[in-house]
Length: 621
Image 1: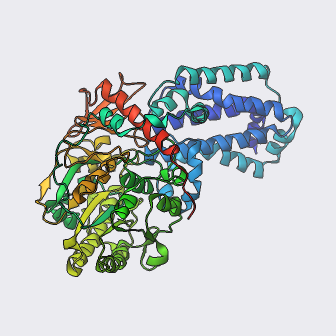
Image 2: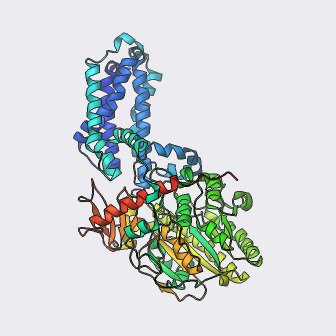
Image 3: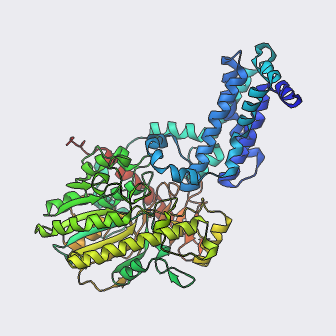
């Protein structure tokens, strides 16, 4: 075979061959993630980090050098494709901390595979060709297996030294960039991974004694001290509390009609009959759903690098289950998945739930996604709530819906909605169909609670746990469908927007315009029940008594991002080159945050890191 023979001659200089291949891959990854097409950036930022590994291969492998390069090619390509897939859902560049969650991948493999794109396979194309040549051409194998035929590059030490210097200079030059995504772009992927690992190891924890409620309130510009009884104080005193966390439920679904047909008729009716907060936002991190449970029940921000379940579940966490339990409430949480998924078995102990219900209780009938369907969830939960009410003590429970999980491949038996043809075979259409089913199951649950008498004696809270449609994942057709829904381009101000609905006995329906986040649920519900949380550190605020808010964001937006009453601010290298998004019209030149708000938000995020890590360790129980 002529072609493999010629390839064998080229393979005699693997440094040059694989450098050219890696330059192409660096270029492709930069295009997939940032849409940039500057070849010089790939050459100056990306190639030196690859050369460090190639030079080491030159030193360590006198023979079978080609195989060493091939292994490095595979490993680096695997990093590139993993980073690309991760970005397409989360919009962030993963670091080594994500490896701690590798055990969860088997549970969400459907979501992972759905993010694969045929173009990503170009990153492995050369490896496939080399394997083909190795298996089919004796001439090719002879060239690469002949140690003498593979020349050592001249000046290997000089190239290695220069590569290390260039990589370190890139890290040093860009170390102060606040926005991690921008930092990874200018450093390039491999340099950024090394920098992130070193920076994380060198992080200095703050002084926990600085974390006081007064400090928090001052940073948020809230009035301190109790000057009068808050509005709605004890409005629902002694009532049950039912929190329903809807999987991947975004706010645009409410009142949405496709060709005149309602998508979520049951939630629409509930919103119209309750307190409804349309400007409510997610604040989760790596743990997604489990992080939402953490934030809602503690009023603390998620950790910077990890899922809260993984790093905070060994602590004695102040929480809503503990406070409400101390005030005479029974507490329990309901989720159809295995309690060990995302380390919930330990998180639930740290939060102080008195009881949990998982797949051992709900069984394996009518499976949708990772467990029993939402219908089974609600059918089996309703009788338990009635039993708890009949005990004579109020209860606080959290119920986790799950059938609307990405990638929204709802079984046909659950398909209750005929989509307009333009939505068929799209992620947007699959998402809407899955949420239509989730809405139907919730409606059945509400009807049952009204029938058995639990509803009229309960505060019912419904909110989304996190986004369902990342803008990074959508193709051109799907972006067009979202533009049809919104009447403008779909962007970050829409992506993170989830609904909050609070139904309380005797409450007059009202639509609240103020900004809120998941961190605000704890103080808001406590106010409704007349349960004081004075003396307990909380970073949220009572939404029924505050008209202004600031929400620092992590993970789904770069560090330094925050949501204010004016919109969403995302930093660039720092504050000065940041971008702003208005709630109504998208990207705008009017700053959504002041420099003071930006600095205060960064400080707010640092406070709970030191506070939680210095809490007493939880005793095993």
